[in-house]
Image 1 (cartoon, one colour):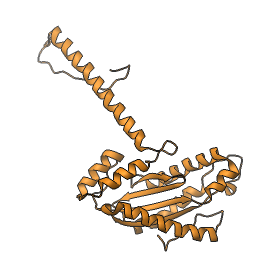
Image 2 (cartoon, helix red, strand yellow; image 1 turned 180 degrees about the horizontal axis):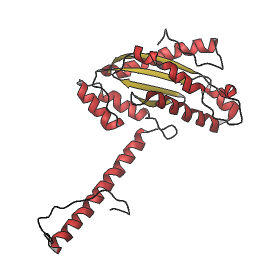
Image 3 (tube, rainbow, N blue to C red; image 1 turned 90 degrees about the vertical axis):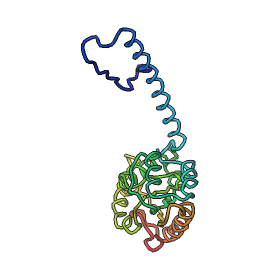
Image 4 (tube, rainbow, N blue to C red; image 1 turned 45 degrees about the vertical axis):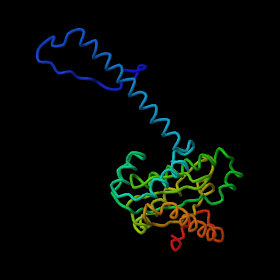
Length: 238
């Protein structure tokens, strides 16, 4: 134990009753206490490191994490090295692959939403959106807050075509978001502009730029054909 928190149990094998002397038991108690302190420090370090990589509002990974990921993947890596790295950082075991799909998501007219309902409602919308995206993702990928109302979705080892076949479920999740209880659902629905691409991990930085460009192409279309009831996705640009 350390600071009233239990970190584990040390078990000792014996060959007969009173196998260990009082001096040996005292020594092992001291060892257990030292191990508890070490485990506490390791846990605290992990929590601080996690906070440094995580967006406080949405719980997504942040730009700092993306920068480190882009730097790491510029070096020649085999698929197992990428999988091990992501398992350590994200805590999920993805299929070993040199490729990934990437979605760039932007909330349409987010400033208008903030102006109409207030910044607290805007924050709540972003939290609900990411919750819906993560529910759709399951363990297939992870999200990064690129900035403001822009997010990246990284899907290691998946083809973009497979992602698009399933993206209608994400649309259903988004359409059912209700942030303001007293307001009808249709009056508070929003839409997303999504750009997507796929490629090798070594091109991660370029892939982010490509998906960003595709997203802006979609945003131009959604501005011309905005419908409050739907989330428009530019399948051609994806």
